[in-house]
Length: 283
Image (tube, rainbow, N blue to C red; front, side, top):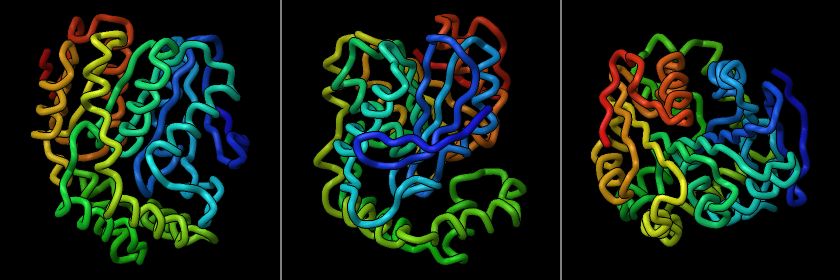
């Protein structure tokens, strides 16, 4: 696996890349996270014959931060498309989690002819989350104090032992690096006031099966509970739903071996043909 800076749509980001070939895969993280949250997935996808790229969204990780970027789903989607243009992807497999799922679902609606498959993990954006959830999430985004970082890590991970001192220290330092406060202020304001204006569930459903879609949900996800995934599965006719036990909002990080197997099986068109321990499949 290698990493390097990349300019796309006039904005600097960081890319983690593994593998070779033309079966390109783009992975996008959620709010407050970064590309290296996928480090336990990239090499396995590469071993399976894919060419995965994980990026830092603007305002996150080692990407450009500050108040210059419009931190909205449509603008993030435009940025993701620019990344795809930079890496030369005519066809791509998309994997997004939380806000990253919302972003890549938007990309899939905009360029369906280029999307070979779509995996949405604990995703937002299929339906409005409502004012109460918007305000709660906005408050969490805007607070990057060490105490709140600890609380957020424990909320997205079911297994408390994964919240190590090193992970906490890194999270605090990155999310309090130069320009981060301005970025998170704009993201927080967007969640509080505009994110429900950009839901894409109905648009994605109207695609009528133009691409295979898989929803992956942690059964212990409390912030964005399984009921959201079930509703999205019902909305998206022909989609599959994989429910992972002993995982919360970041099943790809908590149970990477199982998550990797789910995604690889799904993109190969054989989901469920091999055993998947602690996984319930629907659809």
